Image 1 (spheres, rainbow, N blue to C red):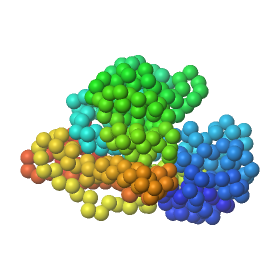
Image 2: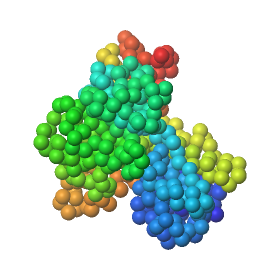
Image 3: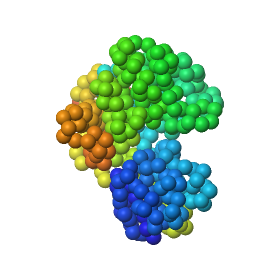
Image 4: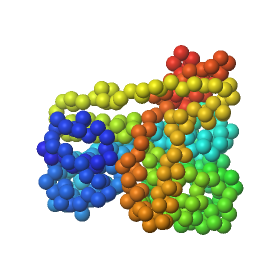
Length: 383
């Protein structure tokens, strides 16, 4: 069996090696000839899987190691009788930790703010769960849910009136509630001065040209963008204006990516009717030197000190800005560099891999730090 896999999918050989021969290729540049003789195609979100790519293939299975599926032509896959699978929820925790890291970097204590969440599926729903468990007031907009699913549902206008607005929606262009340019000139004008606007869903959900106009007219927002319109040729003028800009890596924690690989591996084994031989606990490496010291009894200072040790989001921002400067000088192609930053993304482990040690008098913060996901074994668990 021949397996074509995006080169950015981790542990492909370890999981899929016993099932067939694996060829790893850049996901964004996959062509029809690359998959013509393949039996299995494994992708991430940068590869549009449609008739143009797989029309001449003999594929029986397509797996995307991502939550989102807007890059898959599901109707065409069904028409062709090609089984497919995604990895819902695999990197939800990674994205939530991205949100925490961004707010900590901006010195915005989410416990003191109202948080609006647009899109409450796997990622947004998990963010809502984590925040409400910490006592944060959340307002949510998701027209596909009911109050039985989420008691904090409200209108888009009320969500846009929050102190922090986070977008975690898929990209859709049809149906009763399309998300493309869900936030454009009119919606962006409703944001109050000082609002933190964070998009870690899909770039075109926010009209990037309208966002640039809004910032140029009144530079009173704190904007965090991990996703852009379009990618990889993003607006460098917009990058210059945002508080934090990263190259579509919010969900790129090593734990999240490997979980996605494992989920697709399980789906393929079920499709083939074979016994799974690899398992995530056996393959996921432990973090060496994983102890972090808590040195302050001030809860917010403790979080601001600890979070960058687990995830230094400022370094992601700096790498993208350094790339923009090199591109401006003609030293590097920006689009190619954007993809390179994703391909060569440093290993980032999630908060739960780090065990906290509390200096005397600082364990009053154990519950709050445990609620972030840090390992507080021996100091009680949060409610």
